[in-house]
Amino acid sequence: MIIGVTGGIASGKSTVARAFEALGAPWVDADDVAREVVEPGEPALAEIAARYARDGEPGVLNEDGTLNRRALREIVFADPAERRWLESVTHPRIRARLTEHLARLQASGAPYVLLVSPLLFESGQSEMADRCLVIDVPEALQIERTAARDDVDEAQARAIVAAQMPRAERLARADDVLDNSGSEEAMRRRVAELDRRYRQITSDQSHEK
Image 1: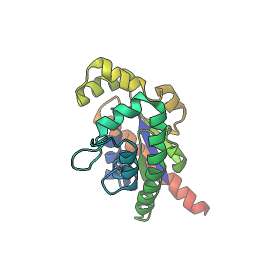
Image 2 (image 1 turned 135 degrees about the vertical axis):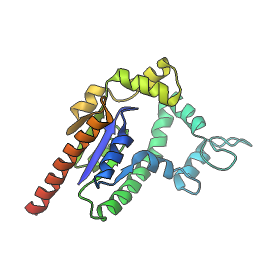
Image 3 (image 1 turned 180 degrees about the horizontal axis):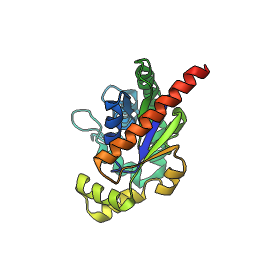
């Protein structure tokens, strides 16, 4: 069984995933895979570099041939058409690579595996999951954590939160919710509850077969 894990920025997705991992559930992070597919030598990076190459200029590449993420981000945030083009190049490759990673984890004999993705719903990656778990925190806490973690002011943190899927919509699409606004101990207790539930579901499904 694949559990999709998502949540807004600074909701603690990776921390929660590590708590599941400690109970025997491995995970793959879509953000890590998104970085993999634009590394030097990858076809996606070649396409991106070609599109934004300028005469005698590096375009969106650094001197060492790696992707200049800041330069690319400025382009796609300013032009929705460019963002759609970039997604058409990267999203299918991310999905294919995620499928490979998940298959490898499933073959390990784990009771279930996690697909951790900030864009689980927006990217359609939720279709790859059997259940979707939303890590939820109040927006005020998201803004506070984002400002502290990313060293941005409150206005920037608010803009980042506002640009994401609305909290109510995420919650409406969840099969399970983990409130991560309390203590680490409370989070671990909830993870243990969900772990028992997921193991039971997996066990029930195997008996049905």
